[in-house]
Amino acid sequence: MSKSLKTLMAAALGVSLLSGCAYKSSSSTELTERTAPITMNSVVFSDYKLSRSWTEGIFGADKRYVMSVVKHGQRQSPTGTSEVYAVLRNHTDYDYRIEARTQFFDQDGVPTDVKPTWQRMTVPANGLSTYRELSTTTQPLQYRVEVRELN
Amino acid sequence: MFKKNALKTACGLAAAALVLSGCATQNQNIKGQPSVYEDVSTTGAVGGVGIESQDVVAMTDKMMRDMLANPMLTGRSTPPRIIIDNEYMKNESTSVINTNMLTDRLRIELNRAANGRMVFVGRHFSDMVQKERDLKRDGAVDGGTIRQTAAQAGADFRLGGRISSLDAIDRNTGTKSRYSQITFEMVDLELGTIVWSGLYEMRKAARDNVVYR
Image (cartoon, rainbow over all chains, first blue to last red; front, side, top):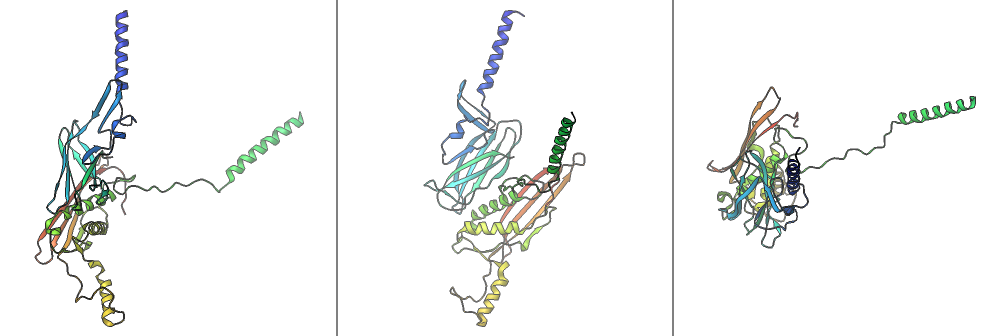
């Protein structure tokens, strides 16, 4: 085997090892989402298999995702309760069965409304799906939607 | 030499006696398996194709939120009187379920969340109320402290519904699939019109041999 071929193989092996190290799995403790501050009026993936990002990789900041939030917001229902919606996009070739829930907070950031319940839904392969949730009170509310893969 | 052999035999016998005495003990001082509490709103360790706790929680929660967003039910200046019980909730499915679990949870959660926007008539307690009313009218007890009314409350709306299902079994793999459909409808008790409807449907497939009771 020639010397140049050996060098080339070693370089390829090194690059593949480095790229392997640069990738952070969903169980990594160095994911940005693990310690991110709680934000109101937001949609988060509490299951890091669906979406995760990091800043301390060998090649710097990076992210991996199979699903993303296209749009989210809230509006009033005819009776004055709040309706939260989140449009989710599946970036894979496979249907994903997920569950989502909404925690409502009042304007002071105090949790209010009834206990949040997981709502199951399917996001079709390379498609969109909309999650909706209604509050039970008529007071102005803030929301935080959590999304995870259905077990 | 003889003494050495005797000592070996004695040691062997002692060891055998110790082992046997260990085996002979019937009382086992071991910690038992603790009960495991599970979140009622998620799939537990035992899961099949029937209606389970997470389905009961999810469907009643969805119906409650939906009813509170309906102006026919909660947009009235005078809160409507509503009956929610299992009298007209029929189970026509192959799932074994006590329909009281659905109507009780729905009524209680709705009553707590409505906070006066709806008034619930406890028709399933009407016997209890009538007995007390009779005692008061007969003078066996005094009139209480709140008020007296000519009759028990009449209702404006009552919940009806149906659970139906469609089963399929793959005989090669033993996989069982069940599509369940649960309907909830609120009926005007004067006109007979349906003022609100809710639908919850799901399809589950499993190979587990789960028995529901």
